Length: 106
Image 1 (spheres, rainbow, N blue to C red):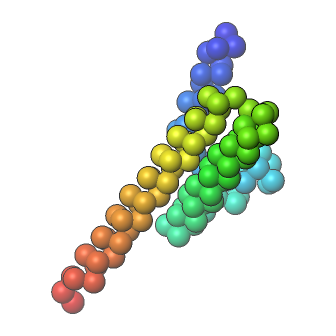
Image 2 (image 1 turned 120 degrees about the horizontal axis):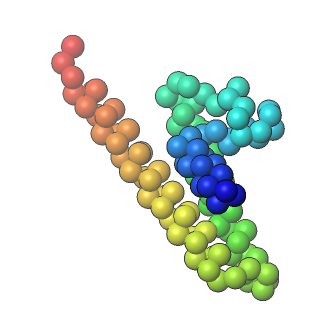
C-alpha cells in the first residue's frame, strides 16, 4: 500500500510542479505565493530552474568531497541539463511570439 501511496504522491507532484514553490507559507499545498498571471508563472519557473541548477552544483560538490555517489551526480546534472533546455526552448517561443506580435498589422 505504501508503494501505491508514494506513486500517487509522485504523480500529484509531477502534475502540479509549481505547488512546492512557496514552502514557507504552509507547505506544498499553499498557493498564496504562486502567481496565476503569465509573468508570475515565468518568474516561478525561472526560480525552479535556478533551484535545479543549484541542487546539481551542490551534489557535484558533495561528490568532489567524497560524500555523494556518482549516480546522484549524473542524475542531478541530467535534470539540470533538461531544465536548461526547457528554459531555452520557452525563451525562444516567447521571442518568436513577440516578433509575431510586432509583425501584426494595426
